[in-house]
Image (cartoon, rainbow, N blue to C red; front, top):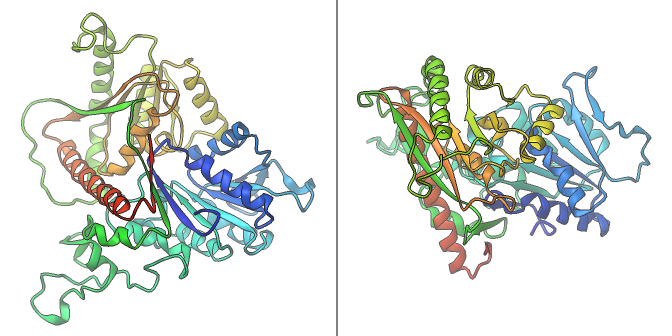
Length: 461
């Protein structure tokens, strides 16, 4: 599919999306149908591409793009002395893509390069649909006929995530290119003038709900008519699932502490409100994480499978995920361990990642966005989440970091540390609700794929 047209590899995490894309690019390169490859993705995920190409012995030349202003923009290594015919693989973070757009349009030959959106659900979504990085990616996509999107969690919050990620494919590969995005009218309105049209993408595939915080007075959430949506995607999407997860079966559970019941509203509060409340809990969360980790390693928490041993041996690595800088950096100082955040340099991030994989680090603290995407953390079987988010797809990505061929444990443990009577109750409730939507969406995709004779469903056994 990738060699034939633009498409989405909506495969489960850790099932070979990077290697498949490199193989497709290498085939097109050898056939003379393309020359360069541009990979846009989070910095943590970009470090995996040269390693995978080296393991595949492809002999590709990688160039990393840095800087935003013209005076600070640079390529590492500098390819100015390379022959003009030599193909290159450019690695760039979406945050700086708008500043490099002009350079790429000047130096890349039209329809002679392949464009990859790695972890496309992070920056090609409805919540970022009007930002500069989305506009820059869409403009760059107009110069090629091969746009490949890689994501283990293509659907995140609403069906509009799918709408936005299909837009860069253009009219020839996007079945909804000429479909209106949304009418922003309430389906519960009594008068016909203000009632929903029922024909736009949002009316057909999303659920509308009143939202006093939104400018239009309503928001589109969730997904519906999944079977109809999947039936229009076989020519542009490949879905892969792991039928048997014998390597590592994730075990997800909440750990509640404190007294009292949750008294938080069910309303879909803005992230700014939830962030402010979560930040107020940072000191308590650091103490909670410290205490829970100590209990795990001291053997104070009994477990039926290993009654005579602690849940976590002292030599076993543990990964702790957080969100706010005050939590991740503060916890790293208390535990005296390395931390990966958005401010961690590429060199330090790669060094920490390799040391952890080699078993040299017993603890690793990381930001969900920076350390929970595209890297291998299979040296650990215990993962602690001190600051959960409503974004279930983000947690699915982080949970998948422990899976892979190097994982020796049969079961992974994902403990979510929550405080009763706090904002954690609302976040956890929304996280479970969105997780159910994601599971229902992919279940519909698997069913439609089997009914279509496996046209776009692949099973890894």
